[in-house]
Amino acid sequence: MRIGQGFDVHQFSEGRPLIIGGISIPYELGLAGHSDADVLLHAISDALLGAVGEGDIGRHFPDNDDKYKDADSKELLKHVWSLVKGKGYRLGNLDCVIIAQKPKMAPYIGDMKDMIARLLEADREQVNVKATTTERLGFTGREEGIAAQAVCLIEEA
Ligand SMILES: Nc1ccn([C@@H]2O[C@H](COP(=O)(O)O)[C@@H](O)[C@H]2O)c(=O)n1
Ligand SMILES: C[C@@]1(CO)OP(=O)(O)OP(=O)(O)OC[C@H]1O
Image 1 (tube, rainbow, N blue to C red):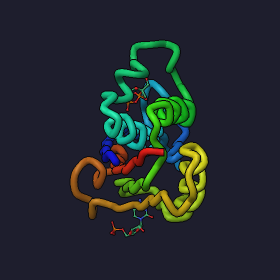
Image 2: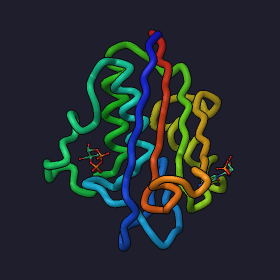
Image 3: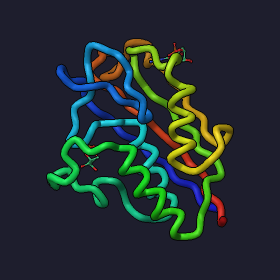
């Protein structure tokens, strides 16, 4: 059994879609990034890579490589998952938090859980996604961007 943790931040940007946990969220702002800037899937990818001692997503998908320009983070996470699976592991459980003053994530959490479980070939019950504001404090509180954290446990298959 191994544990991993991931953390990511992306800044709000005009004219970009807001995609979190693989789900498009209708909002006036999106997130800036080299890829589609899915802050939650990036934190999950980093947690899984950390659990198997494989560094981070920047190492696997460099942000100066045109191949990953506007990349779909679901595809990046699928790649990470195949690496983890290839080392003989399956998901134990995954717990995540999205840190955002706005928009409200609650209506989209169920779809995010289903999406993440599908990408990780797991049951919905193995995946937990939650959200919090920072009570208007800090960069998330000032609505400058969104952060996400993830912790995973993987087990020998
Ligand atoms: N972007 C967000 C932030 C929070 N939520 C939900 O609201 C609850 C209360 O948030 P506090 O920061 O005031 O504790 C939180 O537990 C989430 O369920 C949300 O949906 N979207
Ligand atoms: C995902 C990658 C892909 O090039 O780019 P970004 O969307 O900028 O995201 P970040 O969280 O900064 O991680 C780096 C890269 O791996």
